[in-house]
Length: 331
Image (tube, rainbow, N blue to C red; front, side, top):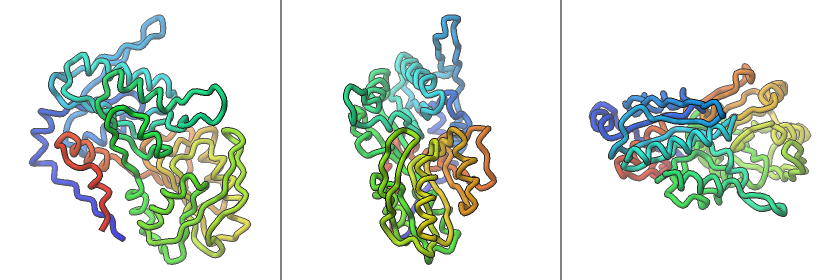
């Protein structure tokens, strides 16, 4: 199965995009915003963020928004609350500046993990923060690999939900995949792993995981063929890495030939990258640049793939009223 991407040349459309689109970035990941704008062929407009003596933030969009299609790029990464408030203030500023439409480009939605009420008297943060964005002025959201499908339904505005499986698949096609198995750490991510396995034309397996705390999990078994095969562990995000470390321990009992680890969101907190990269049987760790990699987290095994071209194309399609789902058509 081949994945068909079609990115139109920029030369003929750059002038109209420059006139009609205004792209701003918060402070969460300006490098990604710059790369997206390079692919779009439009400038990244300046934003001024000021902190008052009482610790309150003030945001000013330093470019004209009136009757323009405004895109605000801001993944919710550490410090999450700081970047969330910054995004809400950007939304309010764009709405107050008479923007024609405001789209939040959110490569990583950290509150998506708070997606269910699985204990008494807890909040569902994923829904609450979605409501806050809509109230602040978001007319549309462009997201990448939400933690679970139901998060899409938390938003009262249209959501274009992208995934990075094509970018990951393109990377892994450079290897011999004749004896490869894609492994999901748990059954909740098995559907995405199965989709990824179909893109590569390989087998799929899944772990039976039980979580006891944020950093304590147990994987009792792995369902699928592992012995003597090249394994690609696929997860949506890696934070502390406890799930991956536990899965690697279970996989070793089944004696795979090689192991590689892949995810969309490489958060790599609490030394996760060092711990995973330090496993001698892990050949490679692959993630995308939806979030900035912490400078203290480094590993010679890490490969970071760019999702800027896909986000830029999705933004262009949103602006032109074209299908975004066509980005995922297969042939």
